Structure formats: structure tokens, C-alpha cells
View 1: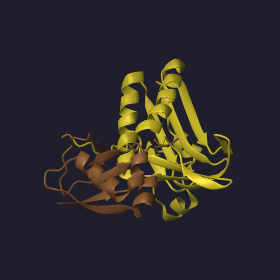
View 2: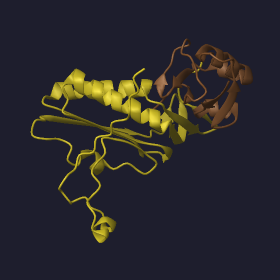
View 3: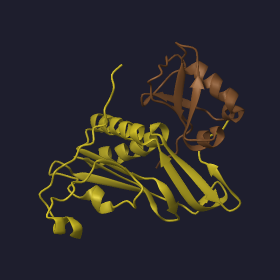
View 4: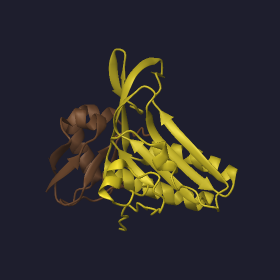
Length: 170
Length: 79
């Protein structure tokens, strides 16, 4: 059996615009953006887009999944996400690699939040880059579809009157 | 053999913790594990469960070893 280790590509960047005050105080290099991230901290659009596309890209598609106030007729109060993080990162890496190959993408980044999220908060930010628009748009559609199928991340919906784990039950 | 199974989402609620230890005959596979955990928490039968062995989705025929990282994967809902 071939074991796949998570390949989390870190692109070093000489740009220091995103250095935090603490990093500047410590005189350290800025943290390079991660392609794949599962985080309990609020997601940053900057962290996803910073240094994302090179001159070979003609299209960048961004997707934000946000917490909606209703679902299947229920009035949603908040959501709680959890992940089987090591496997989720491996599955995200596999998804990224497959999309790059299938759609000839030049970059893919996926950042997913875990923990409690309030209405309107961002649960996921995904980015894909390609030389041309159609491939990038199609790749993003495929990315979200496949993520919802094979990446071990779960969502508990708290609504007026109860809570439920989202997903098909028999 | 005793194996440890990681439980997430509703499987954690139904089995009462983030992991459970299950005793299985040596050489048992995922199908035997599924029967054993459904016996422990019959409500799991209502959930379309998948299993992961060493972070890969497994089939009912996948054999288990005591050192494997085994997880219950109820329906996922990322994004």
C-alpha cells in the first residue's frame, strides 16, 4: 500500500507586506502562505491570495463558503465544524493534485475553518488559478463538490429548537 | 486483538467519546469491525458509515492490524 504523506507546499516569498508587528519585532521572516490549511482561527482572504498567482495565470477564481441563516426550512443560529485533521489534509492534498492535473491549474489553495462559527462567518476559502477562465471556473465547481464528498470535515447545525449533524442519514 | 477506533461527529456522540477500543479476532477486517461497533451502538446502523484505515478510505474487506489508525467517517459536510 502506498502511503501518501500530506504535501503542504509553502511558497517562500520575499514580500514583507504581510509581516505582523510581532514578526517585525522578532525580526523574523514572514510566514509564507499555506496552500492547505485547517484552522480554528478566522480565515484570512489575504492569506489565501497573497502571492497566489504568477504570470502564467490568466484567471483566478475565489470561493468563500459562508454561514447561512437558514437550512432546509430551519432557522440556523450557528454552526460547529470539526475535522479529522491529518486525513483531511491528506485528502485536500489529493484533491488539489487531481484538480491541477485535470484542469491544468497553476495553483490551488484551500483554507477551511473548524470550531464554532456564527452567521455570516467564512467556513472555507478556496482559490484556483489557471491560464484561462473556463478551466478555473469548472475546477472550482469540482473542488467544492469533491470536498463535500471525500474530505473528513463535519458540520453540526444549531437551529431554533435543536441541533443536527448535517449529512444524509438512512 | 484490540484496536482503537477514532470517532467523529455523530459517531462520537453515539459511542460516547473521541475513541473506542474494540476487541476483534486476529485477522478481522472492516466488515467485522462495523458489526462490532453497530452492536455497541445500534443507532449507528442509521448512518451511512465509511471507515478509514491509516487515513485512507477502506472497503469492508480491508484487513485490520492493532497498530492501524482506524476511524469512523460518518457523512462529511465540509465547505
